Each structure stands twice: as structure tokens, then as C-alpha cells.
Image 1: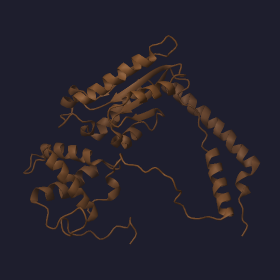
Image 2: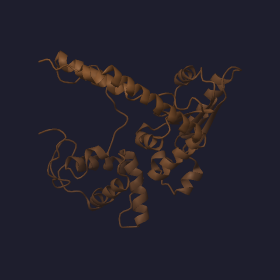
Image 3: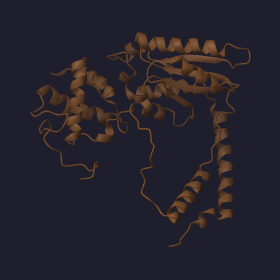
Image 4: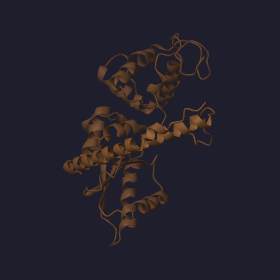
Amino acid sequence: MPLLKLKRPRKLGSGAKRGTKKGHLSEKWRYWIMNVVPQILKETEPYPLTIRQIFYRLIVNTKKAKGKFTFKKSEGNYDGLCKHLVQARQANWIEWKRIVDMGRKPTYKEWLGKPTSAKDWWNSWLSNFVDTLKTFNSPMFSNQEYLIEVWSEHEGLTPLFLEALKDYPVTVYFTQGRNSWSNFYQTAIRLKDVKRHIIILHFADADKYGMEMTDDLKEATQFFWFHGESPPITVERVALSNEQVTKWNLPDTQLEAIPITDFIQLIRSAVEKYVDKDKLAETRREIAEKQAQINKWILDANLEGLTRNDE
């Protein structure tokens, strides 16, 4: 049976697949998995969530509901959630694509496509080449006063950062925890030719470890950029603060605990503060004009007519 083809939902908590145990869910876990989690996934559509995000939303949602079963923050509940969400997806009660793991990625060494003929390879390459010509781009912030970068310790929040910044092509950098000084140096080399004021907007947890990440970043920028020829650089901690934890009544000091709509707006507002929207609109008009010129060249050269029809 194809891997991604959904089977008919089976009884949750039954069966003996790898990673699960026989038997039914307890009453409280049945309530959390079959009632609260689907509600969380519906509220956050279309964004995929990590298990950590679901964990914190469970704490918030069950606390607000003031029902019989309040989901508390504990290592046991987190481990149980991981296990039961596997069962729920294996039983097809929850779609696999709604829960993501952003921390594990393969390093590709082999192309996994099907063998192809010379004609198919030629036509495929030509099609990709023409498609590339139709996506002309240019640095969109080159006429802006600031060069903006957004840094965060949590790669699992990638979909939310991308949604918030879809209209603003700024660099998003995930340190996956505490950054190294080797990487700070590499960042300094990457940005050494920038002549504009550099703004780094930092997002980290509100615990001691997260606060120290911002301190490290500020210290590193002072060390590497404290030269007469370097552009000015500012590190601004956007989240998370203890005041924000109180404001949103968060159950924890983790970024994942922030409600999704509030988090997206927080990111967007932090960036917009440093964007000249009139200049950005002007750059987009120039890009559209240049793309129109390239499209004309594609037609004049009859590039799309160069496909091979040989047998």
C-alpha cells in the first residue's frame, strides 16, 4: 500500500504497531487527543505544528476550559503526548502532515528521480531554464536605510516566520539553540561589505538560557563590528520577555507557547518598523518592468520552441 495513502481510521489506542501498546486510551488522554488536539489543529490551520507547540497549546486550552482534565506541564505528559500522537496518526485520526519535525533533515547524495532519456533531460532542463528566466529577482532592500535579519533559536517555528515575512524578503536565521562564536565570526564575514545600518531582531525563550543568547549576540556584534569602517549594527530582542509572558498569560517561557496569530503579528510588526514601504513598492515596480523585458526576450528567442520531439 502506498506510504501516503490514508487507511480507514481504526480504533484509537488499539492494535500493536511498533511504538504503541495494546489497550485503550485512558479517559483523560482520550479527551486530550480526541477533543482538544483536533480543536488546536483546526484553530491553527493551515500551519503545521511541532509537538512542542501542541504541548503548550494543550496547557492553555485546557486551563481556559476549566474542565475535568487540565493538562499540566510535566515531562511525563510531554512523553505521553509524543506517544499518543504517534498512535493517533497511525490510526489516521490526525493527518501526518499537520505535525512536523523541523530538526532532522537528510543530506542528499543521490538524485532519487527516475532514469530519463536524453530528450526528456533536454526538455526538462529547457523548461526549468525558461521558468528561471520568468522569475527575475533583485535585492529588494538595496535602497532601504536598514538591512534587517531575523534570528531565532527555534527552527521548529519556521512556518510562522515564513508566513509573517512573506511580504518582506529579509534573512531568517535559526541558531538551533545557543550560537557558537565560530558562527558569529562567519556572520561577520558574511555581512562585512554591508554599508547600511544592520538590524538583528532576536527571538528567544524568556528563561535564563534564552536571555543569555541575546547577551551573546550583543557581545559578539560589539566584538566583530567595533571598527571604524564597519556599518552600525543593532541587536533588538523582540521576544520573549517576562512582560509578554504575563500579557498573553502564557503557561511557560518558551516561544512555542505564544498564540500563533499573536506571534505572526509580533514578527511582522518588528520588521515593518524598519521598512520604508514606499521604497519597497518602488523596487517591486522596477522588478516587474525588468521581468516584462525578459519575457519579451524569451518570446523573441523562441526559447520555448526549442523542445525536442524526437523519438
